[in-house]
Length: 219
Ligand code: DX5
Ligand code: ZN
View 1 (cartoon, rainbow, N blue to C red):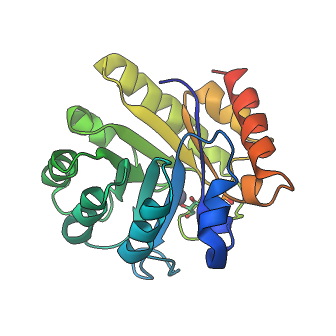
View 2: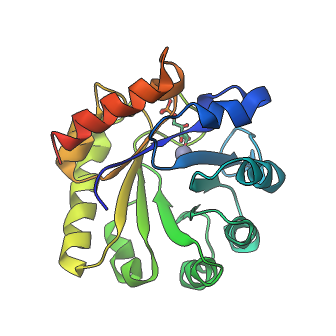
């Protein structure tokens, strides 16, 4: 699939989500951060808002569920029509069953890893998933500083995926900007979430293209 840029609407104007999603130019995905104030210390939005976004855009929606009990809630996002649904490894009780359920509903299944969660223990899960999300900040807030300590894990994730021979995307999320995206691409990431780097820019669509160009130079 190659390089994909996924702006995160966490840094958008929540009162104007339709126009905020419209102004993303050639972005490949729209990343939507669902937070429940349990899995992370922040509360954002849930299924009704995701459904409203899906009804107003042709763009592919990438749901990042930072919630407890994804086994109970994640399928609803797939049923609603999300392109990707990512649940957190730390929160899922039965990740194989859940990933299969997401795929059955027509979504790509993603597994997210917090900075301290090792990737190796998920090697056997790879045939069941379509994306690994390597968090490069502690999940919960936009605008945090990129954690370099996560770079070796991106590399190891890429090695596992290459060895598997499967078409599994490796997404990075947290602190991705024009200063850090090249390191992520070098390490093997191919899907780049950026919140503040896109919505904090004067021209969001131009920021998406800048990020894409930088990543492509290091793919
Ligand atoms: C953080 C979220 C991110 C957030 C990234 O927990 O998962 O998707 O929007 O924001 P930036 O790009 O500003 O770090
Ligand atoms: Zn996210």
